[in-house]
Amino acid sequence: MEVSEATPKAFEHEAVFERFNQFVDQGVELVRQGRFQSASSLLRSEEMAREIGVRYDRHPTGVIVIKPPGEKDAESIVSAQALFSNFDHGYKATREEPLIVLSPISFSDEARKGTRGEILRRIQQNEALVFLEEWLHAKQWREGKPLCGQEDSEIDVAIYMRNKGIELTPEFLNRHGRAAVLTKTKAR
Image (cartoon, rainbow, N blue to C red; front, side, top):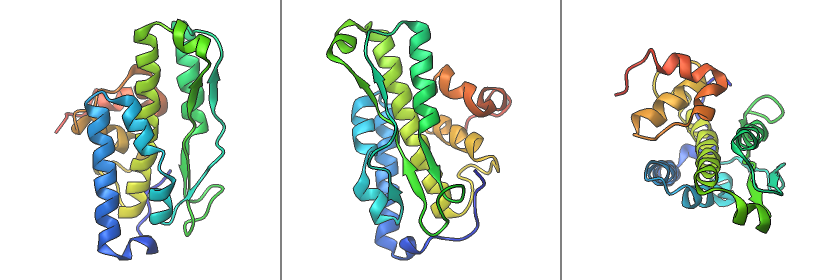
């Protein structure tokens, strides 16, 4: 995704800018604090999408976990969730009406009860990181520029998160070549 120069019409009112920035900041803070379920709940906001002029996919492809996942299963789960989630403002959607898709991860009762705590937490962390990532792409779109000066929007989002003190998982860093670039750049 390339970051565009134009400011979306929905943001012509300063109050909408402010509410959106507060929303993103709250999501950043929840993820930074490790409150992943709260962050994911907050970030699944159809209301915020509508307020900023973004279509919200109310029926995204989700990832359903039927039985307790092991370590390798967890990697596949978070990879699928990231693949199904996106902020689109020019591929299938339009610049005038972009689309945000947040793919949820759901667990059957058996899977939730049987999943080791550290694996469940890792899956929840990755879900929250991906939801935040898509809203940060919306922020790039809204501002019409990178958040941290990186033209590659995926790298830009990762640097932004790192600079905010968010712990980035190996799964998150391994997508889009982020790990290689982040090891070369200093946190601010």
